[in-house]
Image 1 (cartoon, rainbow, N blue to C red):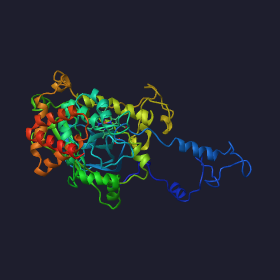
Image 2: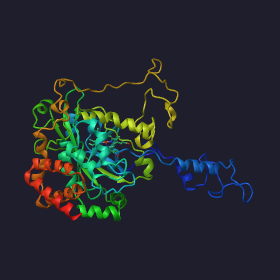
Image 3: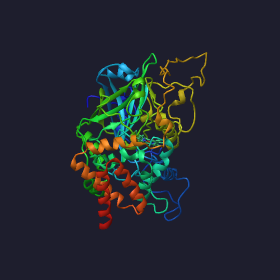
Image 4: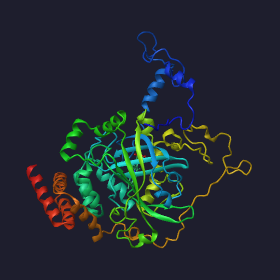
Length: 506
Ligand code: HEM
């Protein structure tokens, strides 16, 4: 790679003496006290009980006892790498004051984490599931996180549904098993999920590793200029490796034989210098265009479609560096859609609004109140504010500087542009009718069905039939099949026949 950086050194210069000392290591306790050897607990005599004074043993047991931190409540299974984002055009700078876009050619260090959603930390990373696609850009003006998925839409547009929906994808409280009745009970009762469900059960639901899939913001954000003028934007990242998926049979086989397939594929590609890259695009609408656009731009269950809103290239990113330590650099990474630099604002999309709260909330629980001091989360530009103390301060706590806006030792305040607020009357129907399903909700599912090749249609029908065939409740099965029939009668009758065959074969 022609661009590397040291996460733990940041922009500082390496100290030669420290590097030399690190190559000549002596075994020590956590306090740096050289200790003769890691084994041999101290005991009274040859055969007696252990000694409380054996600090080394107690420390090593106590530390071991605390090795696990809470895994992410969703997206627990994942892997990632470092690299850089490069601004390739001056398109973004026309719409946004964000510093990262102002100089064509400039490289910005990034960390990316890919994940599945429903499974636990040790679950198969080839499972049928959406993939998380989270990008942390360490811009010169602070951290910008793009917390995307590998699909342009999502299951819900009412955030109150999220914890309930996720519970149905997790384990049954009694059996501790994944439960197809729970899964389809929810989905068949919440038809706004249909388009995402169809994508998930096509072969797009089992991507061939993390390198061969696209990422999408899903949500609409706002791009803001210095003068307060603004546009709606959706962001996407298209893989330069080409999209490749597993069939259901391949993914099922891999889940047994190599459940770490995607993690291994990414690590090994970077190790051999085959650096994966993605091209980043903006789709942009003016506030006025949004008011009359064919889909409500705040409805996360609808994509815009590149035919209706063209993709404009803004940059590329490359993954060029594997982590030295997965826990420190990937597990402890804290991505949040609310980590937004000047030039970006959230839209009023209610799911996005809920996410702005949920992520830092979970980070404070999962990693602690000072999670932004952990090197992988820490910006490269200096932090100066009035937050102090709390558990696990590791960065000097901003030294002697005043812990309030002192007039004696002032720091600078830089103005942040805000969208000029002339759109407050228009919030879009998605906000008023979060749960009401209308005919519009069946349009994207039909566009998707019509876009599939004969083979892709066959796979979708087969994948759905096998899964729904496991549902015990006939009511739930029929309710879901009715939804597919409403999308397209041929689609519905094919799934109905497939489900009947799966039940007969069971
Ligand atoms: C992870 C909540 C919707 C993408 C998470 C986590 C929570 C969460 C609590 C764990 C974060 C952590 O422990 O660091 C929610 C809620 C949602 C929602 C409440 C809706 C109301 C979405 C949507 C997307 C998304 C719509 C994509 C467009 C991700 C990704 C991660 C994640 C990529 C993993 C980040 C990582 O790799 O650390 N979500 N989520 N989520 N979510 Fe969501």
